[in-house]
Length: 162
Image (cartoon, rainbow, N blue to C red; front, side, top):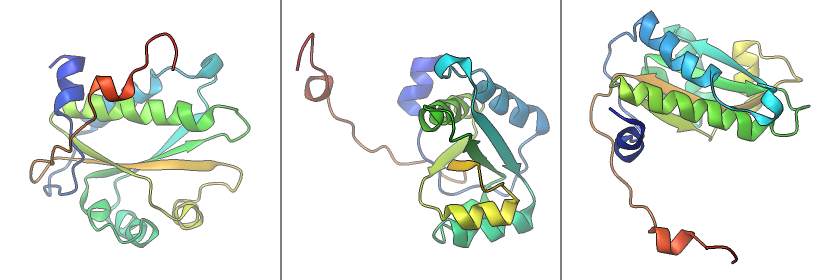
């Protein structure tokens, strides 16, 4: 699968099979995030990898009761150093690299932006001075995700000037 095919076919997955994600697949997904670009190459991120079933279940209420968070094989918590100016963008780019690398392997992901940061930090022991940017579920899809339409290029692109 090439990058453009991954971009065109990737979907948010909210139902996962009860099947372990191999260590080698997980490490390749994490490597894709590690290699992502960042402002000034500062790499202001850390990733908490959660595979423990009890911890994943404890994250469900912190993620506004999105039950699939507890069902995914892995939850990756994207964290960043808020002292770095572009920490949110940089970490989001790294997480997006992970989504594409996962999809290439047949693994599904879903961004979790609806969460209670304080609860996530408490559950996972994340220091107060670290920002939780987003969570990413990762696992083997139980069913296909749904395609949601996108605006045309004509609607979103301005050439040279607005």
